[in-house]
Image 1: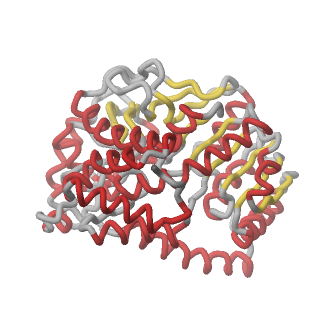
Image 2: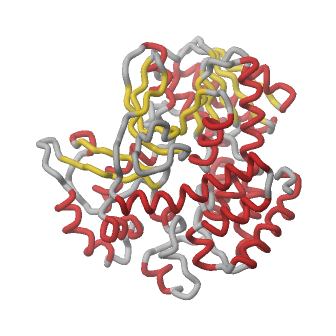
Length: 439
């Protein structure tokens, strides 16, 4: 068994996912191929994972491949490929994604999924993933590609529509959706005792059903508690509670993410909304800086005191691989094409997040049917941007970047068309060689 990890310099995530594999009797003795373009970060990951392998008593082989010239060898013969790359890193590209739009009066919170930040991140990542797909088609054509990189719907949608590689997009927001709602509203239920149905698009999939162990619908109780928490100044999940209040359903990803997926909350003409909804502007850059500093300390401590015991996490990757190898079925919330209208009121070329059954046949998406019309409408405002961004990446036509930005809900609510185009041009120029040439 060969498991290749693309972007293995993401040491914390590589440690979690490969550590999960080492907790599996089925996967623990696999060959783990670590690939990155940063030699120092790759070395750190290798050091950590070797220590973990020794602690676990695994017979796994851990191989390192650094640089584009070694990428094909990293992928050669892989059964599974995990993707966790960040093209352009925090510095310079995330900084550009945030600082250039600020010049035009556009503020963001996370900027990795939608909005102008999500658009630019997709445009610099898709060409790299296209190269991965070309290599895989040659040296690992049957491998299953597990994509963890954002913007999830744009990247996974591209892979599924324009490459022959078997792909599924994975995000942990589905696993923690119900838990986050119960914690926010201080409801004394265990998610594992409840039944739920979640479907929509990545970061805006809807908790369509939530029932307790006796089959009782919990939404009436949930809705009775919303106003108290929305008025609680210490609540950091107000945007998603507002979704329940105005659209009827809770959604998967956090309020700081969803604050920028719509035209409602980050508005320069209504600055009071930022405080009212506890919206953390520039949150992702802060997280990047803190994570970089924290990792330096963590790595130093690990070298001095040794690796701590790793318990299997809630990430899907190891469970998916296990299910494919053993044919023991496992259910996930996966990002797949809406082929055959899994969600009947969203387009077939959209990337949707739906329940999927995993077994030796791979990823088997489940039919969901029709979303509540208001939920589908909210999803479509995001899907429009996703499809146009993919179109821009495939055609290299700048007009499609303009159109994606013009149709982005938050951008369109703040800026006029001429300003949007100037901002896009500025972002393209500032990114320089991190982006392909558009015409």
